[in-house]
Image (cartoon, rainbow, N blue to C red; front, side):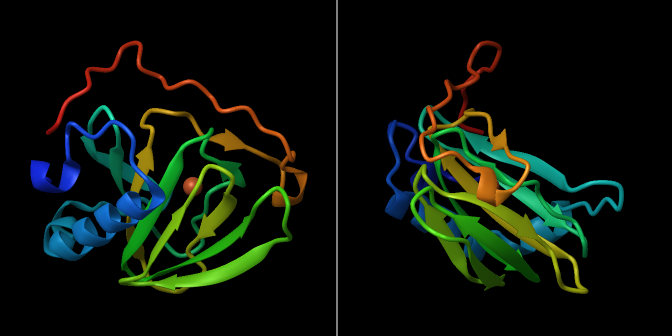
Length: 170
Ligand SMILES: [Fe+2]
């Protein structure tokens, strides 16, 4: 499958949260059938593949078997969005100045967020799940924490890992 330049805006270097939301929503609704064909489900660990990378954004497809989950993490200073394509995902999240929240994200639903959000995403259902994720700026490593409660109020944005990566629009 090929995500078109119309959706990826290859000349856009900085994506807003609203633009990221629109991207994963559109890609999720446009490529649902293709995703069903290329997705893999691995009982040993979560599976993912990168769908696209530009100067401004990266796009990923992730699969989740029941019980699979991320560790508590933030996105190193990147903003992000994800759209559930199949099944449902439970998200526990918080910002430095707020308590913990929890939401069930069903197929067709999108969650977009700025750099301050940290979360745990899990498939707590009994069916496999599939989701498409976008981050801007791209190639910024995630940062893991022992728990959501231990995320510090002040966090420094991490640099992008651009050293050995060829930036391309697939
Ligand atoms: Fe995340």
